Image (cartoon, rainbow, N blue to C red; front, top):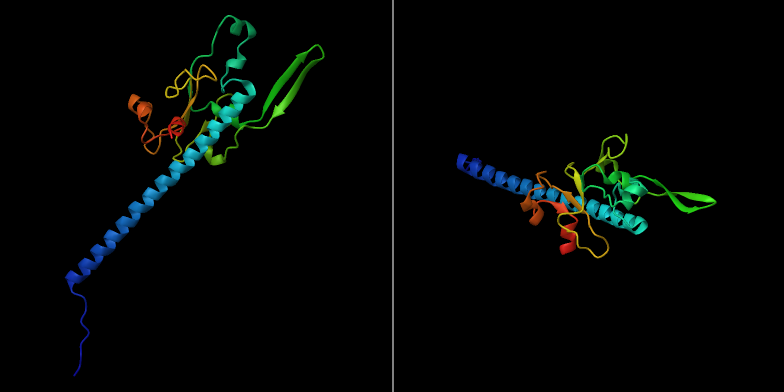
Length: 198
């Protein structure tokens, strides 16, 4: 007796193709979720580093990064203050570049000292030529800007260590932010003030 090999029917082939398609779609969705989680973690790590750099700057100069030091003594004596800061090109100059500071004004002169950067930044975390003040942008994992605000909206202005605290914000994957809803509940954003709430 001769036995013939029976092939797949069209229905069986369609079922197999459907199962393979379902598995491929499931894996694609899972991979996209992992990539999103990796970007959130990478951005959160950068914002933590920048937050720590701002605090180290405060420890050194008793002020958060701003151009307040560039005001003249007469400006400061008259009560002039530096305007509120909201910029994505501000912190690189203060945190990621070496600084030269002058200390010890005496009759013999003053001491000039070089300070190392407060934060080391990778090439993938910055954008733009260092062509002058506030020309380099700090980037999150989605290649969107990280915003620095002083005083910060979320942190408010009643901190005991200073009259104002700063906010650091990445608008996340959708690169949309700065609405009141985002400020109150930044579900899709990565911020330094959500770290404070945990």
